Image (cartoon, protein in one colour):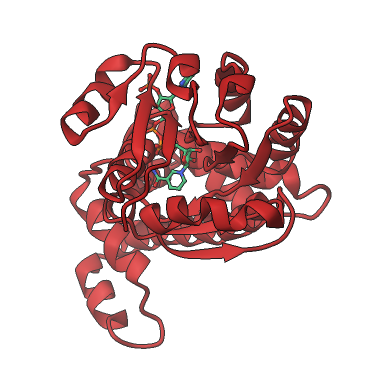
Length: 290
Ligand code: NAP
């Protein structure tokens, strides 16, 4: 469905660029800004206008969409936006994984600037983002739900509304905790199989199609087996997410996520931070003998 609203997308990394393309396909006018302009420039071929600053992108926009690594960077970038230069009734939609406290800080910033704020982190990685098949965990004021629906329809296949702003980020962290545990145990299982001279492919075949199977394992294990980690989700950002989970857990013991964080750290130390999070398997290797 065509839409003549305009959206400023700030941050055109793996996720932001794919989202911007799908907003263009849906017929929105899209202005993009990225710290390294060369990463935003290819979007011009898809019809986006490439801005030199966050303020230029946001000028007159109906939607301000931020897809940045964390709350600190998001606040810094949005601070440079003349929020009062957005269109009347504009909505700021934050889609990054920013954590509980981070989201509270961004929400306060929106209140200070008198802009409606939707917290909408997403589930899904590079391919679902490219295919407009993300799952949006949306939270925020009821009265802008309808207004933002064309954006969510463009970038995702499902939107789950979960209450007031911040609830989306809470649910996202719960989901991330689940992913972290799965990935860490998968990395260790592949390493363990090799240790026992079991071909890890046989493990995948054994669980295939049964109750122990998991599409996520079938997607990430081949990278671990080949040792080639083309990036869908940068490992350093997965480590950031582990930190957000641990920070939000208070005094609840989170041994599995702590272990995952340590494996990510080992992988980062061995230079794998920019590779896919599946390189956690290399963190398992690094821990050998320690
Ligand atoms: P990415 O490809 O690494 O892109 C990060 C973006 O943030 C780039 O545009 C980068 O600009 C920008 N950036 C980094 N530091 C900055 C700074 N100090 N000032 C201004 N801009 C800065 O990351 P991504 O995978 O798109 O992830 C973005 C967010 O989505 C993160 O919160 C991540 O946790 C979340 N997320 C990712 C996935 C996934 O599978 N990839 C899935 C769900 C959620 P430069 O190009 O200049 O570096």
